[in-house]
Image (cartoon, helix red, strand yellow):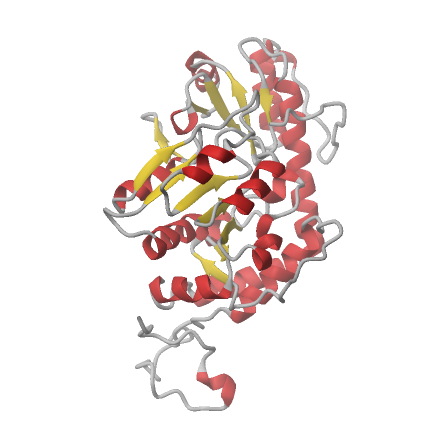
Length: 371
């Protein structure tokens, strides 16, 4: 299939008068269609990731320079996942493997596009292990993973992911929406030697750009060419792309945001450990998941906190987003029965005594949408 709309930069960059796109020359400042290739945004985003992410140790594998041929900017990670399902899986014919408990959107997209799902539950005490043998032997076209996991709040064992890549020849899709919160190296660096690997990213979480609704798909150029054919034209509004470029061009500020967020997450997780009604605590993603019954979420609701019980349909657990320091302190005081004496911590102080436990689209509780 040949794309109807071009993905190259606008022709004005080549000193050509654009008489091709049917724009109104008498319009206002937004009369032009946005750049369909988003080259500037791709460059700003990949530079930002190189500045804030851990660098792979002893990287000797072939690499390419990340660019529009291997990075597709999308309207959030959910849009990237939707593109993957629409592009690579044949309705009523193909099947994918999922690893529950995992992101509910995987199941919803498979249902919408009539893709069969074969569940292979996560293993291990912290649900961080894959049943690699089972996954590699299934008659499926792809395996869909979430790492760090949502709702589990833990990272997969890297040995298992590498073993899967080495033994499964179908598509391996890894949703890395929360990877900047984990401190681990992104799997995007493995794409040059594993052309069947697709990594989906989000700018909404640790980077703090949720209102812009941006994400990205990292993949081998051959796969990305197919995704571009499926994507709707001019998907990203020009003002959104320009704002994102400005935000991503400040790597020091991005690093500070991530450090502040993960520090407050760790403080919240440490405080939740040992609270009445709270079991194990998992905090390697951009939230904290605890073992706890629905009554725990109800108690917090009565105190003014809307959390997510049974996240993604996972019973016996509650997912707690990371709030402002003052809100997290009050939440902990409620659970500890000391709400009348809680003190606000100094902003920016990071406690280091806690060692994190390793470890559609939403649930509706009659109180609003929880993503």
